[in-house]
Image (tube, rainbow, N blue to C red):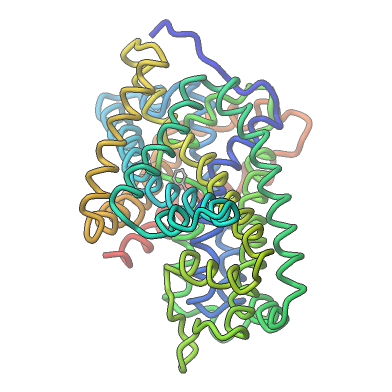
Length: 448
Ligand code: PHE
């Protein structure tokens, strides 16, 4: 210990950083793909309800634990625990989240690397470097290793600089750029033939599908991945928020931003799919199911962009830059969990800890790249389908069953004296105690 802690210097900085973590490949690539394969607007409706009614309370549990503990995920959990077994339980949950974040980062950086190479490709083509452009979009081993390393290098660069100079400064710049680019692209796609049909499929729910078990479970999983739950990320970000801030409102604002960007991404990609279909790219099978599946972004969109001729190069560039930015503000949050743990528990300088852990994760990434055909899926399933739901559930159990009610109340009241925390306080402890663990358990059970 004895290391001075950083913190977010402003409310805006925190919102941008936390929203930056939440908004990522999950929103812009995962959400539209899930929407397209799960009944369009019906999925959107269920997702919205679950994100606010279930993911938001679980998200608050992590933020509150972090701000109460004012430390890395493990130390924060252990501050709440009183008995020895509770402290052990706190260690397992906190450390489990840190490992989960590291595992997610190891495969996330590969996909983010693809985003970066797809962003550079149109530039190479514009410059007349056709060979280089072809290399950038062919999934070769060297290309994959190079861009994964490049992406990890950027992540390490930002995290080495700490909370205010690193995370906050970059999130504040990158997040608004992301939203602006997204809106411009939506306006562009809406001028194209076929977009109207996509608009309809996205916003006109088939209510009879709303209670389908598969749809419900997918929407719930998507909401938890999207808010970065179960990875220690929101515990550590919570610990950097000043006590004078109203956490209940801040958390709601971040949730709102996360959900809105997923919604905007759908508004771009679902109509874009119909535009591509109208242009002769096969997207839907005869029975209406999705042909491209999870490859939607990497196969369908480049095809769509190239159909736009010269302009398409700029659109492709804009889109994949946007994806890379979103991935970067998420990846820095994943690296901050393990780094803050090592810095605070083992008295290691931040720069050293960041480089060491970042390179360690990069080694794992390269191992995955070399065994791409099975390992990517394996690590992704392990961390997101098993790790995240279990740990998020345990965080709720921890807050609901171990944390003293009076301590929770005083933490909620911090920075909140003049606002009515009454309703939140009446509902939230009950929710975290019963509803959240049960519902997350359901997701986990389904993934088995
Ligand atoms: N929420 C991020 C996304 O939607 C992914 C993420 C998961 C970030 C876990 C941090 C921790 O892409």
